[in-house]
Image (cartoon, rainbow, N blue to C red; front, side, top):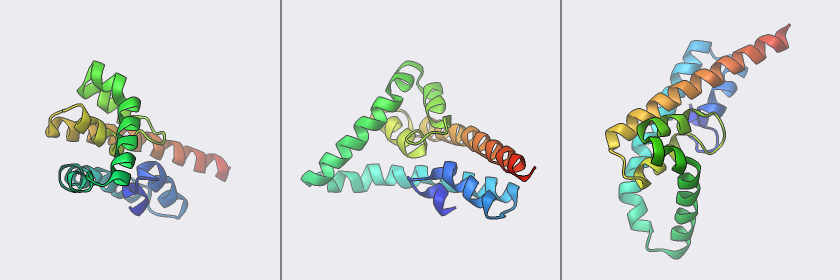
Amino acid sequence: MLWSISPFGEAKGGIPYALLNGVNIYWAFFFCFLANVMVFPIMTFFLDVINRYFFKWYHYKKAAIFVARRAKAGAGKNVKKYGFWGLIIFVLIPLPGTGVYAGTIAGYLFGMERKKTFLANTIGIFISCVIVWATTLAAMEGFNK
């Protein structure tokens, strides 16, 4: 679960880690998915409250603008053109920088409704988890033969 809530791994790192360490395949999926979904309210609180407080400091502001530009550049075309569906597609891609952290920031920057952003992130996370889970199980099966 810690890998799944971490911005460095999300479920893309949590699921393989859990499966490779003998966690039940269904529990691994469920808890990694759940941990990844929990990121949204944490990030929303961070963007609404903490970010505004720290934004007055130069180094924080510089780092926050860098992260915001990356999220906007990565998700920008999809979210701007397709809105809700574009955010789902962006979040479901199981590559670094395309998860719920960047999806939440992108939804925030593009002014999407919070409920729609949450739903798009949750659907994207679920599909991404299925992809990572199935790929990891298939790879483990292949190595066992």
